[in-house]
Amino acid sequence: MVFTNQELAAILRLAHAIAIADGKVTKEETQMIVLEISRFGVDQDKARLISEIGDKMSYGDCCQVVSNMTAEEKKYVTAYLGTLICADGNIDDSEMKLWSLISAMCDLPTMNIVEAIQIMANL
Image 1 (cartoon, helix red, strand yellow):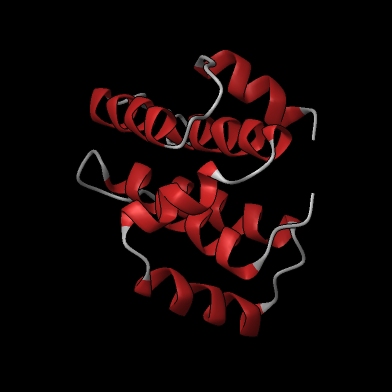
Image 2 (cartoon, helix red, strand yellow):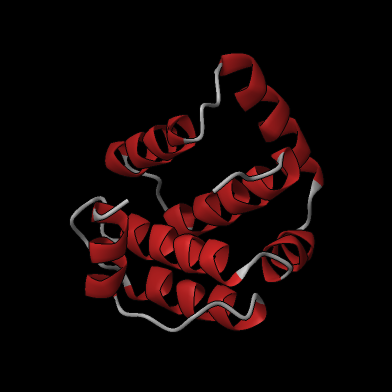
């Protein structure tokens, strides 16, 4: 998969929303976000650019961008966000509710945490 800067910004903004939904962003969640962005070959300069783009996007904008992705890209986004929920070893109800809301708003495929982890493990 190849994502545009705008798509990466939308994914990362939604990931941050999931991470902070329980009131705190843990070290494990931050590490997973950094690791995942590096999967797409994003260096420090490009990460700054993506962050700037994401800062200018509303959550509605992010959902619009994600909803226009291909089915395979949407499957990845769903799995990534689901896996991020349990990165810190605690599956928080507020994070689960936000994942469900984002999934509905972005027309993402339905999956549970176990399926999300399995998909991410096989990438």
